[in-house]
Image (cartoon, rainbow, N blue to C red; front, side, top):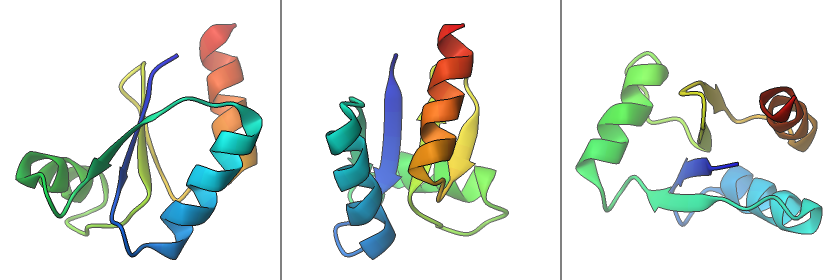
Length: 81
């Protein structure tokens, strides 16, 4: 199941979620919105014009902003059902 995490290197919430996802064995692709203008535009589009990270994009096209690891796991379980 593909998950894309939009983040910045200095974001503490991003670091925490990356560590939690790693412990849970959840694979993801990370995109630094400071290095990718189209990624920054996507994040702004799903967050009311704000560059709020972490923003996760799931295989079904839905996005979650600053989700808990429980929310990520529940979403992935729902998508695999």
